[in-house]
Length: 259
Image 1 (cartoon, helix red, strand yellow):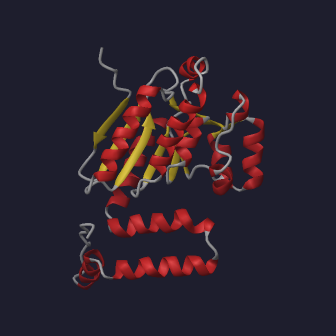
Image 2: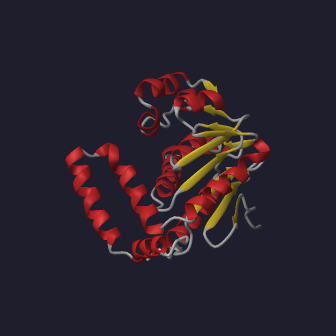
Image 3: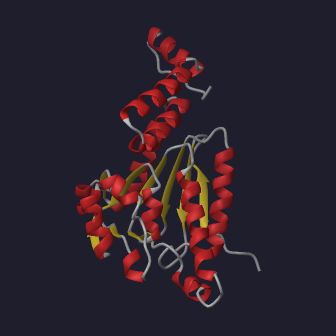
């Protein structure tokens, strides 16, 4: 019997891919979804045309993390729990490593591993109905203890990490966890609008900017300067930079090709 597709992908145009999680009722990530995720991320990595990825959920959930029914079954096997956790981490790490920008359109509950999924995205926008829980301590595990403090600061992160409490979209915005709040019916359209804007920019410059920003907190000012200057020199020799200069001279919009 064929595995039901739980990840729906749709190319909105040549440059933008929409990925929808579809595993009712909570959009948890099962073993089959992990496998589908890894295969898709491999395809995206090899794509030369994609410039932006949008991730959202179907229904009233964004993602509620790992499939606890499967986790319960895995716990009955020797080493099953850690194997499952490693498989989930592999998906998250591979997603975070994508060179192209990722937008999370958080349409509803964002819980545990689902929050970790959102944290791996570059931009997070949410519907007014969205709720967020760093749920690791609620299930005797740990989640988001590395990524969340880097995003919102240690004090606010510990408040969420150590209590496992629920916060709403406005609190998430105040904490810096998300950048925008929209009516649910407008959320995806706004994410597409933002992705479209990003896709008009120079692709190599976008990827390089993401690379430097992701490394910024791990480097000293001098290390950051050296790292950034080397990459900036590389960008200065690209066709896209020359196209930008020519477009400015000709008073037109630049057409970037990622070269």
